[in-house]
Length: 533
Figure 1: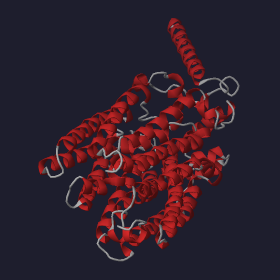
Figure 2: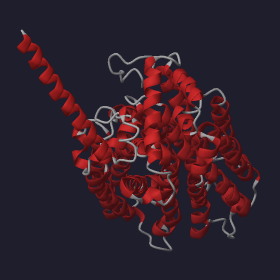
Figure 3: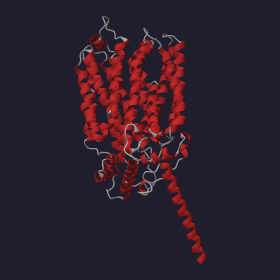
């Protein structure tokens, strides 16, 4: 990915250390994706149903199905909410290590040793709690360590790791589904230990984020961390300039007062929080997790042969389609990519809904058409809303409130994830709503809402530093005008007495007046000099 996007001319230092570190941390998305993807196949396995079913015919009721699948999302919701104190107290790096190494693995252990539903459900809750912590801390770590010119690609790689996790889950499930012993479900679950161990061991050797170290007044440690990320001496002008700007921005933010949870809902910060929460919520309401949570069962009920194979195919499409999105996010920008993705998803969902509704379960051409448009829909999601939602939310918030806002934003994703996971069995089950393919009308309608949301709410942040995003939201009031924004405020140059405590709009106007006065003075000086001759 670093080969596709070149740094701006005369950029000092090396970009590859920060890129490699950001991509490695993205590996945590495998925990998210694998745990999400494995349950769809496990609850469809014959041996698992024989062991865990409470019914005489070894079936799983809609209520049991809802609880077993959705309890992971309930855990992730609470995990994401507590990621803020976790990330601020332990730090981004140690917070990730504890989340993946202890909390997540506790859940995996409980699931692996379980033989009845209660312990299995408890294990999924604790695993979800760990995933929720990780899902908020990883984009935070990536956005705080990445160079601004490739930040979107690096944070978007988190979604790539999620898709790889989903793909690996479908492969492992497919390999063990026919076993007539507990290994059919225990092997897919126990494999998760490997993913968490890889992440924790790697984090031992990685630096803490410079912005977190600045936030905790550890300037020397921040210089060392940034020097390691940029491959520059800690006294290099580029390192000092970047650190000074981060520190000045943080001091400016703190001059406006400390950030409480209530403050997160006020002013432009409140607008940004609403944007982030709606973006993550709508990402779930596009219906993608219907495919990955219940895809195997849906394809079975719709009359498809080899539903496990179809699930592998959709996961392959998901992984492959993420790569174009990682490239396009820094070429087309966040706003354009989200718009294109929403339009494409909306069209495909309506086609699947119409074809599935008017055709029967034995209509082979209709089935093939439905599968084709499901795959095209996944392409649009994986190349746009999948990665870009994490990119945008990772860039939205100021340093003093980043952990709090990002945890609430991620929690909104998991809240909707839980709601969809819990309600879907009732929507498609024959004994309840029995919507079957009609459920795609619901997802398509939400995709249409996504189009309007992006137009009115999403600001273009491509190429801006995290500190410049603060200025963007401070001076631009309408999202569709954000493309023309050019940063004018340098926080390091803000006068300590005159600048701090002012709004960013006032700061920008003040700096513009200074530049205007300096320009007028230089013109007068030039004219005076010319008059002498």
